[in-house]
Image 1 (cartoon, rainbow, N blue to C red):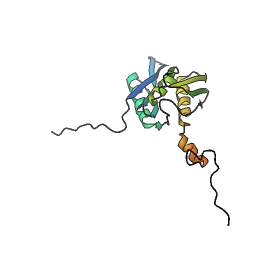
Image 2: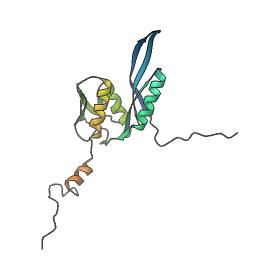
Image 3: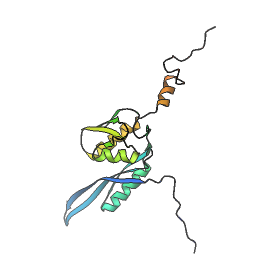
Length: 178
């Protein structure tokens, strides 16, 4: 009989955190029916993160659906050493998250869903403030929105038409009219 060996794929994620599991119940003729929803974040700690949401009648099924959803919705985040390149505010519905870069050794100053998303991305030093809604789904998605705004200095220089270190303050060259 042939054996199939499971190969490790390139999209393996070392960090998988369950942010929130919510139980809901529906009253029917025979009693109550419970169902569960789960919010999960997956990441590789190197700038890739995905957020997943799953619903099922059992907790384990809801979590596994959320993991699969998170693996499908992976985005890349630009990082600067162990922090983010610049301050950003992310919004999702009523949730607002302010992220600010911090010096090495500061740690992750964040709570709940924001902390889980930042640790999955691989950010080690950051300051954050949550404003507005404290719903974990809104906070996680607002954090993801703020992280997706990040750009590198090379991208900004290219967008502004700057080339090298010495030409930062100079205007881009224009062809001479003859």
